Length: 210
Image (cartoon, rainbow, N blue to C red; front, side, top):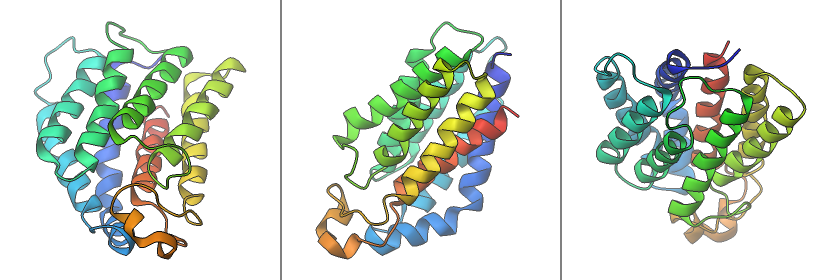
């Protein structure tokens, strides 16, 4: 089994739905340690993406889908989340450019490139209490699963599980990036909203492969 454009579109649609579903949760998380707009911004961005999905030309590849997501998020979402999440999709598109079907190895390349894009844009490292704390364990788990011979769905499930654990693990951390860094130890006990939304989006990828 490989995953193609239908999966990529299903992932985007599921991401939009889950972001809308968890919009208030993300706003609350961000309000506790940030400026409170993360859920609102992501919901607006993915709503704009969905409005454009049906305009994709016939024969579009997964990379075309991810480029559409990237350009739309970057152009419609303010704050830090638009450029960060948009860059993740842009780098993902580059990693799978020219491929119609994605096997387990290609999915690992996609996730790795997306994570590296967030690192490049945000200049954050593991432990800084950012979305990297969800993306990095997700990449490691996906890579380990693929090397063990897991199929595409299992690779994505491993990534999603690790991302969820990574997001939860941001709660005891002191933030070193963004507005939350101004809080110092007062950020302890709060989950990073970017890590949480990243975990939701990666879960959507696994659910789209079901």
